[in-house]
Length: 437
Image (cartoon, rainbow, N blue to C red; front, side):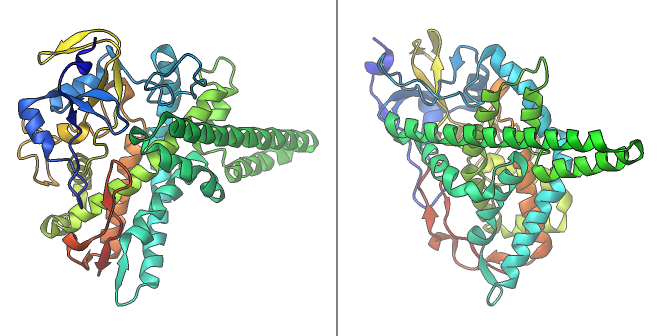
């Protein structure tokens, strides 16, 4: 019998109302129970890891694997087939092969290509907010924080913005998966996977039609016109969105000997929706609230904008991206801090606690935008560290820079304690951020 079934089970530490966390209860766990048996919101039991060293090690430990979201907790033999794995759930050679193909999409050259586009979106949103503001006041969440991540996601991934009512509801459901029944999780996953598969089919048909049209045009072209038509074809390819992630991955999947299959493109779309939308909205809202409630540090960043890189890293450490939603499963028995973890036991490393560990960070509960070094684990660690972390950094940096450039005197227009909160997912965030400038 697993030790999880024989020892006292504690509840997962709760986030205090009106805050993003991390829960204060993790401070006690770090000191007294760094490996604590706990009951998750869905009723399952798991080992919570709260210390920085243990959390960082767990993410890279080959004895711990990420189960399929659609297959954990384990079900009866007649359960429906699991969904395709997201990038976080891929293992072994499959994961390495796909990761090699995807990493360049988030590399320096690609981010340099995307940076001016993200900035243009942010500037447009701020300008629209200012133009429609009364008495130089507005709600940053509604006007700026909420719309930007979806626009960035559509621009980078190639998601049709007009389809948002088809894919966003399922995406939001899955963010609360730890508290849902398996039936609810499966329904959302199947729906999201079906949407992604349909989108890939649509893009494949468009690419095939475009290739046929260009081949026909090329057959009729004279040699002197080939260069001009080639440039026009490239422009048309950009208009079709072939420069977005879906287009690039589909092109790679058609290359002989490619390590990317069609199902991998579908998994990529599902992964980006789950990781790149609501979490970015809520983390950005919390990051801006943190800055607005530390006006001296905000002014220092405004006056020295070159400090944006360490500021972003500190906001990633200080504002939790995840509280207790990283499910790992032990592949074999092992002991950690005197606790006997059995094969099949769930293990939950908690970055929100690790990033406040005083053994890893000096004065960890203080926001310090100049903190360096800052080896936080907001994006995990090891082979499954978040592939899109650099894109998230770029987006957060742009949000802050554009806000301070356009509205250098920005400040909260209501007491922080009076703000309403969105507490519908494990990452809590302010539902409104009224500001004046």
